[in-house]
Image (cartoon, rainbow, N blue to C red; front, side):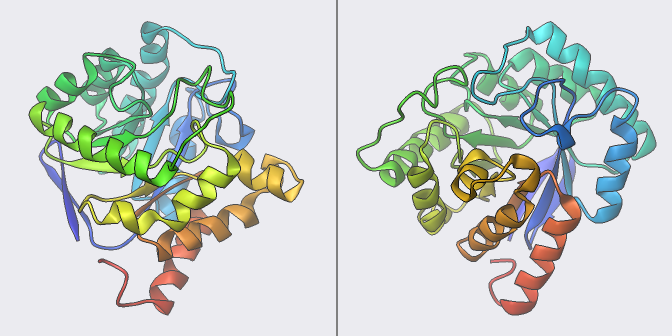
Length: 279
């Protein structure tokens, strides 16, 4: 069981949690995740009704080859969306998906209470100190390179060992920055080949041994749909399979586009492995 101090509110992670993806962007790789200022509250409500424990709001696509936008533009996209969701659903737990410290701070002021950073502070030197001052949980993800370069021939001598060593170092850096609650994300699809992704999912228990909640984000990603010879729009079944394997190997947070199906996956997992749920 894990407890996360979300701006003074305790989030107890004693069973797998589903995190719903809301992208206030025009260019995220899966069109079904895109929302606008006019539709974000409705979609957030739908995800909460379906059972999402966390809503992950992003204002910038980080798919390979995506266009970078400024921190100010990103803030404009996410701050009002978060405010509107919190007005309608004041008990919602919102994470902000950003690698900009200033966006993270603005989002927390608007009502977010978790920071989800694909770069673990490596793309903004102010990020870790900012999160430490904000006193919110921090999702630290491993990524080789940047969103612009990460899929250009990623190479590892041992991908599991590399990610493990990175997490050990990053956990200490977070501690020194005053971050008390750290969630680890192996960064599936971020600077990894399909083979790397499958190896990391098989070896999630290695990272679980670090004693931090593990987040798994595989939803409709390229290693699934390309491997099956289909499109992202057709990759829900493959996503469910990989989420199931992830749960069996220690994942505690599933970051997904399809909340209803992920909730069903968690329910069946808990029914089949009642002693594993909550460990």
